[in-house]
Image 1: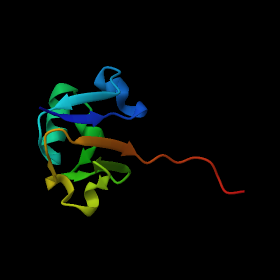
Image 2: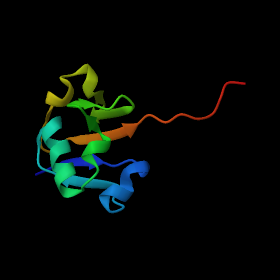
Image 3: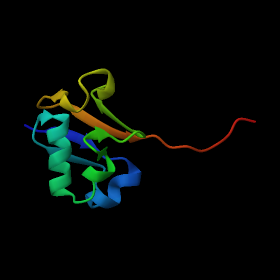
Image 4: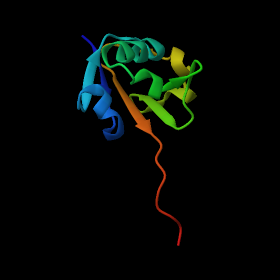
Length: 93
């Protein structure tokens, strides 16, 4: 089995247009490394200096990895990893 990684629209150009991809299970850092290997440029958009970029959220299931073990969070077979970049826009009127 594998792990499903959901790719946001803003990063799909780096993943060949795929909405989701399959990678082997492991820790989040290993999942991102595999994404980086399979889709050059994608990993560097997620991690900088060994940490998740400030405006990138990664969820395993429904849990934000920042509230779990961060990049060391385990991702088991069959789980879904969602990459969710924070976006700004709109305003308060």
